[in-house]
Image 1 (tube, rainbow, N blue to C red):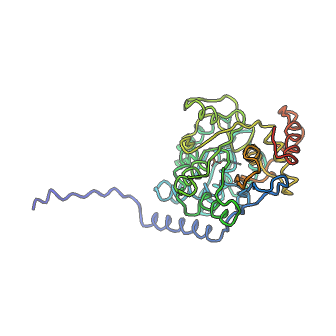
Image 2: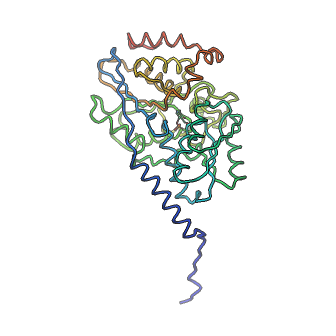
Image 3: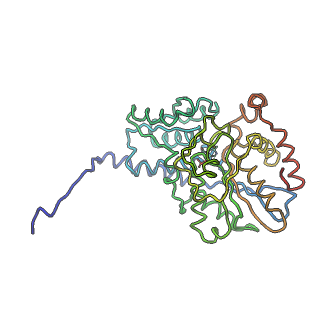
Length: 370
Ligand SMILES: Cc1ncc(COP(=O)(O)O)c(C=O)c1O
C-alpha cells in the first residue's frame, strides 16, 4: 500500500489547559441553569372578555431581569463551543443595554472581562446594572455601536459577540428549554391551549425567529397559531417586511429601548412572521401606565408595544368564541423611571400618551380599541 495515500493534518492548537477551562466554563453555565426556574405565564384579567384570554410570559423575572438572559446564555455556550472564547478572552458586545446586562452576568460567572458598547442615551439604571456585574460601558452614537464594538474587540484581542447577527442561530429553536417550548407547554391546561396569535417585538429578531420556527416545527401549532411582530416608531423592520428592501435604514433611533432598529438586522427573519404592525410610541407608553393598574407593577416600554399590539388583535378577534393571545413582558419598568415614567421626559419627547390612555380605558369597558 502506498503510504502517501495516508495523510493526516492536525491544526488543533488547543492546549490541555484551554480544554479544561472550556469544560469548567460550560459546567458553570449548566449548573447556573440548573439552579434557575422557569418564568411565569400570567393570565391577564380583562372582565369584558368572557371567552378570550390574554397571557403574558413574564421574562422580567430572570436573574438579570429581561428576556436577554436566555440569549446571553445561548451566545456564551455557542461561542465557547465554537472555540471563539477562551480563558483570556475579553467579551465585547454592541447592545441597547438589556443584552449587555445579561452578558456581563455570564462573563462574570466564567471569570472573563466584559465591555458593552451602548448608545449614549441608554437608561442610567441599565448602565448601573452592567457595572454591578463587573462590566465596563463605552457610550457611543447609536449608529456606531456595531463598528465601535468590532473595533474595540480587535484592539483588545477579544471577541465581539454580535448578538444582531448570531441571536437567531445561537438559540436552539427546536426546544431545549427555549422560550417557545416553555410558553406553549405552559398553555396546556388553558381553555384555548393553542394560541391564535403570539405577539412580540424585535430587537435582534432572535426571539421572533425562535418562536416563529417553533410554531412551524409543531404541526398542531402551525395549523392555528400566527406570529405578529410589533414595531415602534423610527424602526425599519416594519418597512422591510412591507417592501422586502433589506437595505432600508433610518437616521433616527427608537425611543423604545431594546426594540426597533435603524437597519435590518441579520437575525430578523421575515419568513416566519405572519403579520407586522407599527405601534405609535405614545401607545406603548400609555399601555405600560395602564398595565400597572392591572398588574400592580411597572413594565418596560417594549412590553407596552407588545401588549398594545396584542389588545388590537383581541379587539379584532372579538369574544364570541374561545381564543387566546400570548405576548411577553420583556423587562421591568424600574429600569425606565427617568424616561417612560417621568412626565418631563414624555413632554420633551412630545408624546401624546393621554389619547391612548383614553383609548385603553374604552377598551377595558367595550373590548374595542380605536
Ligand atoms: C427590553 C427588550 N425587549 C425586547 C427585545 C427584543 O428581543 P430580540 O432581540 O429577541 O428581538 C429586546 C432586545 O434587546 C429588549 O432589550
